[in-house]
Amino acid sequence: MMLRLNRTIPLVLGVVILLAGFAVPTHSQVAQAARGDRWTRGTRGQAAAKPVEPARVIAADGLAALLKRNGAGPLLVNYWATWCDPCREEFPDLVKIDTDFRARGLSTIAISLDDLVELKTEVPKFLRQMKVQMPVYLLNVADPEPSIKMVDPTWGGALPATFLYDGNGEIVYKKFGRFDTAELRAAIEKLVGTKEQKAVRPKAVGTKQ
Image 1 (cartoon, helix red, strand yellow):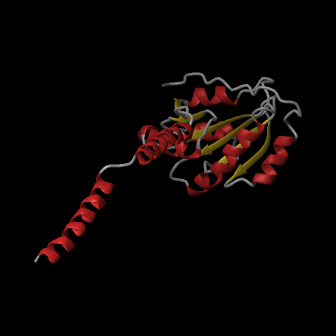
Image 2 (tube, rainbow, N blue to C red; image 1 turned 180 degrees about the vertical axis):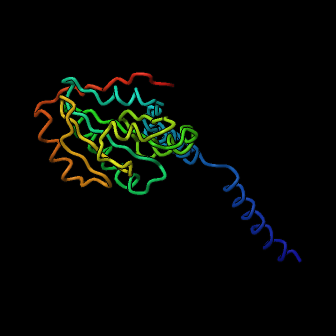
Image 3 (tube, helix red, strand yellow; image 1 turned 30 degrees about the vertical axis):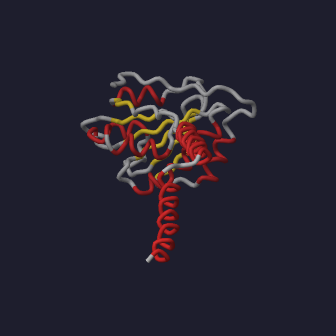
């Protein structure tokens, strides 16, 4: 009986010590956890994306004002919508073009033809996903036909549609449907300067917040 008790005592003590090891973290464990917590917070802070500028609503006169150059430099305009698959597919290339050529004098704007109700839902969600930094506008018109013909009489309104204007407001490149990235870049290269210069953003008339 005594022999059996003597064997049980070390076993019980071993279990107690083992449980204590799980219940009470060591100093090194506490320090490691603190370092890990700081690293996680720091990573979240670094990964936080720059706030995307919200899309602004414009009417037909606002669109006309955006397209006027008057020597302000080349302008790239892309018409798109969140429900348009080719638009979504080419948008990363549009964002990259804006990033690469902005310092060389190219202004880039995106005109959404989504419904007005999407201004607070799908449109900002998509812009955040794309990390868009260019100005984005939502065209709000009862009848889009006059605006379409004002942009280009040969455009039937199909999306996406991309237009490149020179400093005088003349269209030097246009594409109905998904643009060819290399082709568009080559057209831009002919317009932009070789030295860095600040792109002039077009001002919209009749802009609504």
